[in-house]
Image (cartoon, rainbow over all chains, first blue to last red; front, side, top):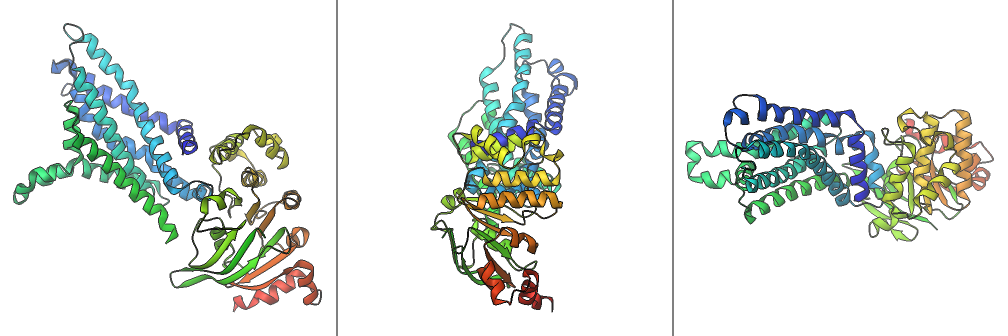
Length: 242
Length: 239
């Protein structure tokens, strides 16, 4: 599994696309946080990273499918999947290796954003006037959200040889699982199920962790969410054996 | 007997790709696996390498059943798939190191130098795979297959698309490897079979139509050329 993880990370960082997608992510979050007046900290007046953590899930919806779309689709297109599957590796090892590699890349993309935290920390009136607990919670939430999106991306990448289809489907699925449940629950005839419907969506659990509340239910939600999609991925890969 | 196949069947939906084939690699260490396109050669090889399971029947490699011990079987097999898939964005040594780490080999570095030497990749060893010519890619595919020093090699059309010099290079390599390993290779080139194989298995429409030592096969067919034998045994597929 580690050998797959290694290979994926090396492969990712040896391509230009990797640096471009990471740079764009940082550029857009930077613009939202410091430049655009609607969401800029400087205009907002409070020492917090809320606007970053609000925009990040929507950027992840595009960044993560871009990272994961090639992982299985390309192997199937080039036929190298046969190479992997006939080596002493189980399908689980292949799936988990790829999942952890993509998640690690997501975490690496987040690391430079710590500069935002340091800046706000320094800029606050009376230095250090920032809710560090909530920032840690939000980062944790983002990583869990990243894990959920990565598992979706890997799942759609397992469908076949086409990376564009993988990308499009996973953007759609990420969006649906993130915010569609909130919107559906607003439909009047469904209002009696409102709380159970919103708790199916990622958004509610992400918000809850972002507040700095570490509730085991949210952790279980994210773990089982990623687990479900990884299981589906493994099932799709195993379909060649049917 | 490294490979034993008994009553092996594989259907894709209603279509039978292979239909009850049985053979053993008992008559020689380099076995030629022949048949027209679509006869079921690649399917058989995929079953032997545990890539896809059979519908019925049994196959074993080094005494281990492919369904019961897939990991052990894979450890003992070196497989060169048809069309030789490679990670084009990797470097030659990187690709070999990856194979070494997948097999968790301890002396991966030393083995890499051996394999590079054996496959004649010396001059190309620091290049990116996408820049290699077809012949060198094929050598690399073979190098990956033999990297873990498996007891059995399964090569699906190892010389397709190579120029005559490269074909001879690969053939000599296969002959050399056949001294210590069991090699099954599929091919459409009859001279190749005559040059390297000791045993010949011919399949047509998913059934075995010949399985014998190369020289026995020729004797029973009044010393006709292998090409004529092949055509007479498999020609019905054209009609």
